[in-house]
Image 1 (cartoon, rainbow, N blue to C red):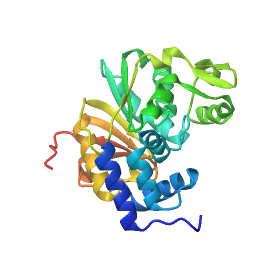
Image 2: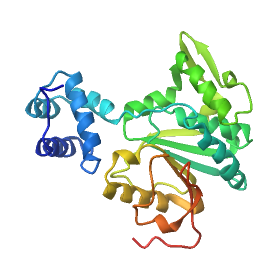
Image 3: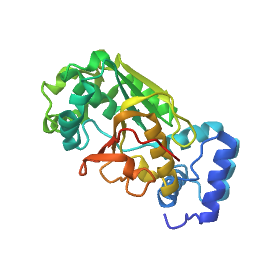
Length: 280
């Protein structure tokens, strides 16, 4: 795409326009990552200059809906990183089982694949009926797709492989119905999941959770925004609650790194330490 380029100044102008016009704030996202995504949108919509993109964004709300969907799409799959689920089952679920009501937040849930993976594990551990899973994402179209629980059938072979490697205890095909080239997730898995829109950049604490999963989202943020989001998660966790982030993400550069105990350094599972107030 040699004919297209964006200077940092042009990128900042675009991000300010989006914030001012639509209220979505991408200004503290990783500059390299957000620039790649903006330029991908330009390429897909055959726009060659920053001026053309700004005009389109400022005057065409329908274009912005599409732009937002492309900008915020995240790669996901069921039982992604199977070893993570194995450790979650072995090291976190026994504690979750001690709560009468288990509250879990999937932040940045994309199109729901990891949320349904969690629901399957909870069912196999006999915990699904007393679990409340709050699944949120910035993108309303992602939320609508996640609610439907419809996935391409061609993905199921890979998902089945992941499920077996994660220690799954049943037949993976028990959890969906194949129909017209799609896999439709069982209604039983959906019944305790609440999908809703939530913006990690601007929205606040909305409940208290024993487990928060936010995997492969922080990598899109700069250090300041990562720090702000980890503070949000800390304030949203119950004492001794668990936080799971992506395997390429870290708490090392945040203000709160000393307020978490490491449960799995490889799979980035942490526990909020007891009795330490957040003095931010």
